[in-house]
Amino acid sequence: MCYVYILQCKDDTLYTGWTTNLDKRIHKHNLGKAAKYTRGRTPVKLVYFEEFDNKIEAQKREYAIKQLSRVKKLALIEENIRNCK
Image (cartoon, rainbow, N blue to C red; front, side):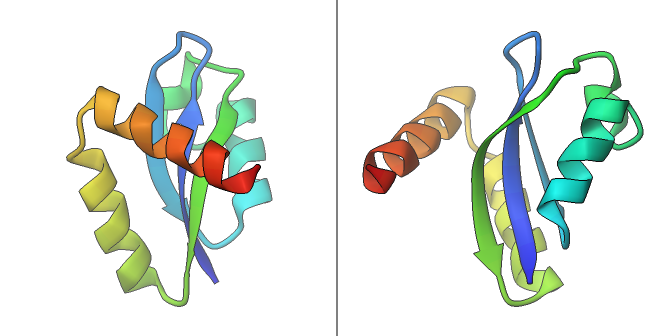
């Protein structure tokens, strides 16, 4: 299983990535040992994720999300929150 995720950083910026182990990856972000972007922006908080069967699908979705504006990423996050209630 692969995951695409969005993190909210301490400075309120958003970071999008993909992984095969979501818990481990978020932990590494918070230790400052994952993406260079998040190193100075810890702690980070998981605000969104999607599951995929393979790496290729996850990477394509990661790219698509990264192309979205901040406003559209926030709308995606909010829509997910509403659907989970």
